Length: 349
Image 1 (cartoon, rainbow, N blue to C red):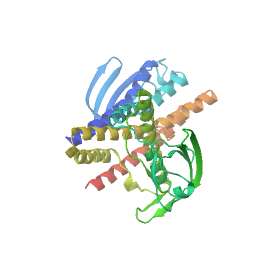
Image 2: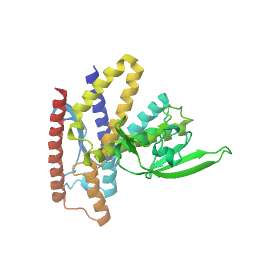
Image 3: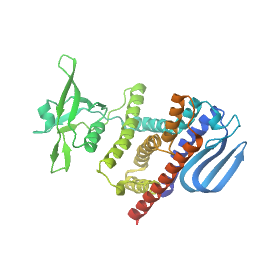
Image 4: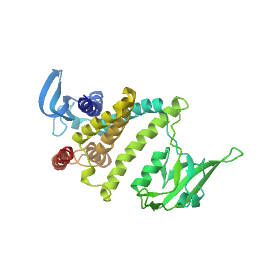
């Protein structure tokens, strides 16, 4: 059952992504030929007007096939005959819908469990934070120019950038009620005990109830922001050799992870399982949205690059050349998917 639940969650997230493309295409008057969940041969399909709705054999991926998307078509409802701003909206809608779904799920999660803070509970003796003057009760607000809203923001940045000098900004409330903004540079030191670089800050890890709907909404935005950064920082770690291909998981690995996590959480009750699935779904939506916006051929981000170039230069790039670039990107992504699938199978068996 947990495996089926994992496949269902992943499928719904992909479906919501494709629904973003579908909805904006319809609103912009673009013809949609097929809206499908999955890849490969069709298992079930039904025709409604101009659009065929399909469920395909492989429960990974999905598509929204639009009229004239990758070829010349004289039909005024063809994708390539619409204004460039309309096409930008349609292409960007998929990742944006993933971020919106992540935000809604984050509101449920934060509303149920509370929000984290970046308040310092203690400072470790002999570590850089103490020398920098950070004190218990201070609230860290920035690190190396990046905003900090919770202790996870600071801790994960330190984990993914262990050799960086840190420019830390924090706030301190004085006895007179006034808030001071303080700043210092510190260099994390390696701890043999933990096997990590540490700044010497011990955070208050408690979760606090949101103070009204605006605080709940803001905290939910910060939650989604954290997971988007998590995805991008993971790429940073890959490019700097801090993680290997063995640490990368594809759809099969994700399903397996959801399955094992459900089994681990199930002894604590249905509510714990539900919260865990919501949290994991936020990560998956942030992952799908952020990765699709990368400026790589065949991804939404790659298509947006060509559309932005067209917007700037006032005319489109030759469709045949653009198609060749996207085809090369698609072949690369397919090869990467096969490699990741093989890696997932190897780790599974």
